[in-house]
Amino acid sequence: MTLPKEYLEYPKRRYGMDQDRYEWSILQKRKPVSWPEGARVALWVVPALEFFPLNQPAKPFKAPGGMVTPYPDLRHYTLRDYGNRVGIFRVMKVLDELGIKASVAINSRVAERYPLLIEEVRRRNWEIIAHGVDMGALHHGGLAAADERKLVRKALKTLREASGQKVTGWLSPAKSESANTLDLIAAEGIEYVCDWINDDMPYALETKHGQIHSMPHSYEIDDQTIMLQNHHSEDDFVAQVCDQFDVLYGESEREGGRIMAITIHPWMSGQPHRIKALKRALAHIMGHDGVWSATGAEILAAFKNQR
Image 1 (tube, helix red, strand yellow):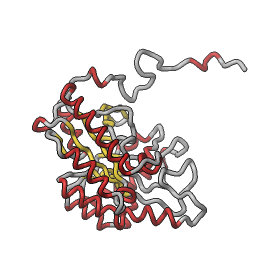
Image 2: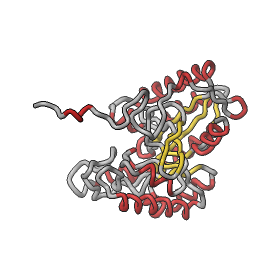
Image 3: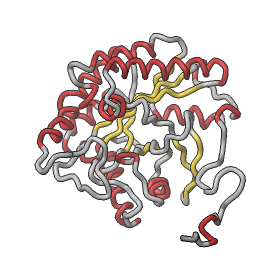
Image 4: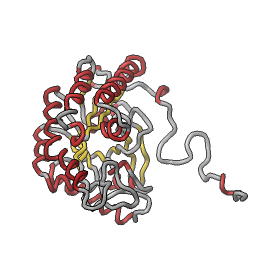
């Protein structure tokens, strides 16, 4: 079969990138960033409070952590629910003991079902990141723009009213976007998105409604990725988190401030046999000088002030 001539023709083919969302940039050649009070690494801890519907749609795909056995999959449904009922409080205790603040990614369905969790987040002055409606309402290319707009507005309206916060961060369920997602969230006042994992530092994204930023919300240093998806042990989780931090800490001495992002799923790390692993990893980080525990909004504000 012969490929048509236009197959290799790109409308925006040029040096750098073939799209207009963001500029091509090499991290090591950028101007160094300085964090407040001379900190070397900004620690950004992001617990995820999620709701997985028992009748979770199979299309376009099921978000990681979703139901896997025939309906009703009560085994996985109740395990995920464990995080919102029990696990999150162990995670909160560890963060409180170590003096760490958090940005909590919350499905709006969780805010509706568990208002106490919103109150606990507010009491600690933690940030809320909009995490969509629930883990069954995915954003994807087959979703009509009008329908996706409704999902965005529903999630933000619920979380803003429940928390009293502006809610300027967005993490799509399963990090899944359509071609319209960035434009839709920017139109609703979102300032940063956590879905793009191609950098260690923030960078600007262009939308139809102005510029927003991508924040380096790491998928690699994620308890679910390491222990559930990759089948590594709790000790492996600690080692990988510590290794990640040690490299970034070393780079920060030579190349300027860095961001250490850690995703925590309370139904995993909030288990009695795992919580000590989380504490060990975070204690290692907090045992270093020059670590700034901050929310995503605070980190972005410090970054933008230097740009």
